[in-house]
Length: 98
View 1: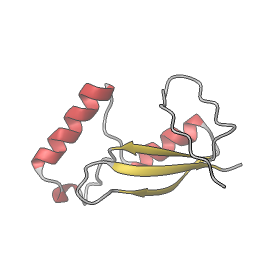
View 2: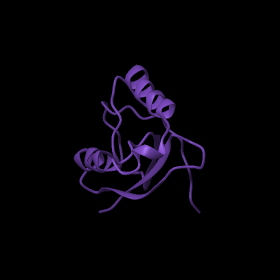
View 3: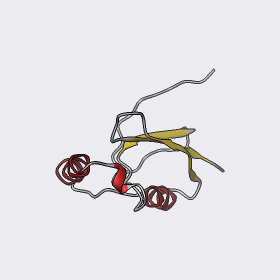
């Protein structure tokens, strides 16, 4: 039986991942150059402003998210990523592989 625990994550503090099987992130994933025309200008502006004002951060393409998690722990791998219909956010599921 799987147990699900919700926890807030602070990137700059130690996270005990010894008891964690996977992490699910809900964040923006910057579009690739080929898909940027699919976004309207308003959506792109919203994504930029949200990242700057809320997180003092920047948009990250999927490859940057993979690298960020790889740097955090070598066994942390992206299992899947998808964007719910009508959302500017993406869901990324990372698993810890030994």
